[in-house]
Picture 1 (cartoon, rainbow, N blue to C red):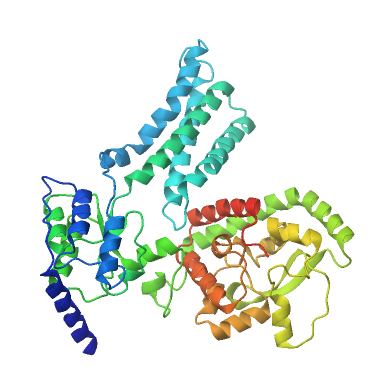
Picture 2 (picture 1 turned 90 degrees about the horizontal axis):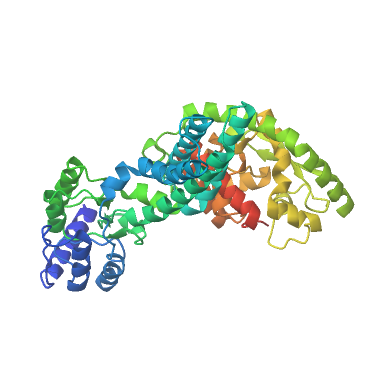
Length: 492
């Protein structure tokens, strides 16, 4: 009851404050939505304007003025609808020009086989990139080149192995122009983002007002947008909050008109790449059991991947083993009990990167020994390189083959640390609902951490991975892992 009274008093106070402010009326016939938002941020907030940031009106107006200037996006619907045909045209046109310059007739020689391979490559590449950008922290532009390289190389390799006739110059020209078209499409897609207006109330203030996210205008203006048939915008709100009847009605009208209405949690998770859990429920995780169908496929991918990787890694293993042996006395491998799938213990193997030491049987001593600190003096010279490049984790492909681990998943923790975290952090054990991985979502976004406060953030990354478990998220993690390996970010 007291909460309801507080909300009603807050609403009355906002309305009283708005009566003293000038009003800017939106006319869809004479101005764009973006122009109106700029005018409104200058004139002040109207009676039912809602800001997702601070309750301080001065800060809210400043945020509105800062984030309301979104450039017009003319022709968005056309570009979204015909994006693939346009990319195909841009990728194939230069290749066809090269074919003509070589004085070759169309539909002769290897023309049909090569153009089919190019169309297939460009289509696969476009589909993969379109799925990757749906996930949090997907820096779309930085993955254009790796995805193009993987797809074009893969298709070319298949053609060579199957001895399909092809034109090397035709395929190369199509691949180069296809990559350029992909870059241009990725750059321009940033300008095609529709504005998301964030309605205040409840936990909507968790939304970061940046880019195309901005404080919402008045309900009257949003109603005018709906009546004008505008579809190039979206609403973000805490749908569990008790909004006014007019606000609830507007959300329903927007949904019926085809305007997306997002619950704040969906956007907050997309921005942060984390899932905050206050209690385990299907409402927050979708299901307590993650993507069952993909989990089965994922195990098959793990087995095939491990079988393919082990022969390739054996020469690297031999070389690293020799270097480790020459660098410091002790075993080449470090084997430690970790907590894995469904809370079961298993013995994880990795290359030794620290000097051998004696550890007492005390729980606190075991915990301290399991925690790696920045510039840890126990790390050997070659160990620093192995940790930075993540090469010390490679032997875990054998754990993957045995079923103890997956190629991708939450990192397994030492038993002593896992027991500590489980006692301090609610729902920590839920991360064991999937197999631990050699690399994972938390590792590529946060790096190595051991402190309880940092582990809480890591746990939220793990929950995001469990909730959004899919082939595309795994592929995004692979691409991020390649970047981490080359930069050494997050290593200790």
